[in-house]
Length: 168
Image (cartoon, rainbow, N blue to C red; front, side, top):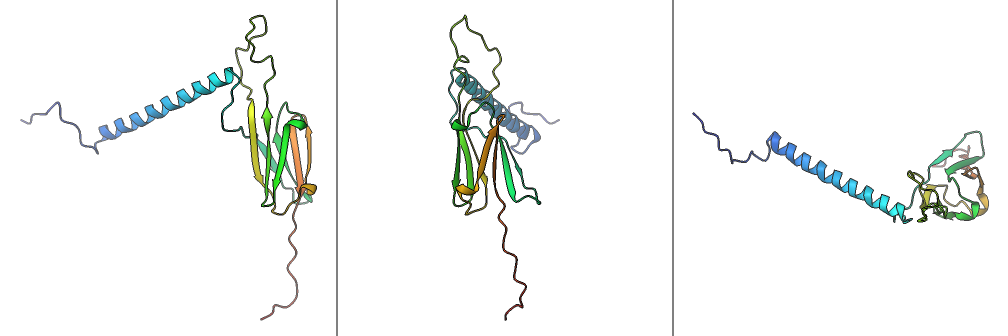
């Protein structure tokens, strides 16, 4: 009869070894995610924001019959003075700013309201979208209403190809 060595390790390619390796990788990833989440919660409770800016959601409407393209950014609770709109000549439009929490949100006075749930995000935000290269600031219209920033720019119409005879 064959005797099995209880202390022998399975081969590195055995299903058991691959399972253990995957299990360790998933456990490590889970621990990193939990620790990162705890750091974010602790920072939020003290009014500290993360290094990476938030990215506001955006919709871009490119309606064929319109002469303009419109991007609508979701920026609740902000005033127009708190929002920056920047344009580069290589065709990049950036919306940025800083959404500050209300002063009463991070209170330490026990007589003031408590917040057992805080899901609203505060801190720096930035979102960059591509626009036609060569677009100028004077061509851009922006308006803010009800927490929605609408930015529009003219559709760039390429010149129609000439109808003349091709030259050889």
